[in-house]
Image (cartoon, rainbow, N blue to C red; front, side):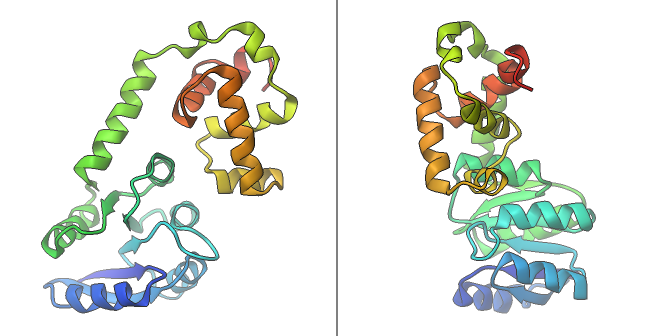
Length: 222
């Protein structure tokens, strides 16, 4: 039997998934949780094989929870099951070790297949999400943003803004950056908007690629 935990802040979704999954041969729902902290508590009591993890939950979101679980219990497989295909969540969840990223609305047969696939060591990612991931790495491989950013623009970046840039390059979400630097998420968003404007970059993805390619290393800001 594959032991599955369901983590979602909506009780109706938890109950619905539990009822349907328990009808599937070879799957046993051993626990449910309404937020990331509850997930960690339940894992410590009875380690599941697979966790179906919602992204946006109170107390601790699914990305943060994924990072903690994978650090402490690397054998536990995690499938992000969410309505959001936001780039920031996709990249960070996969970076922290999620084995799958599926959008809610998939059929229960597809979900059953995903659970079996990740349990056996494979990965499952929605086609729409997979396209985003491929595009991201393709853009990183093909682009050299350093050639299009004027040195004068870089000189306008303040020390505080460099701190934000370095954390974006490490794949941190706005929430993680706000915690790291003791700032509000709104302040972090404002910093990012200013940084993108100064460097004439389109979005945080381009900013992350620029930081990885050269950024603070080239300009002596490590």
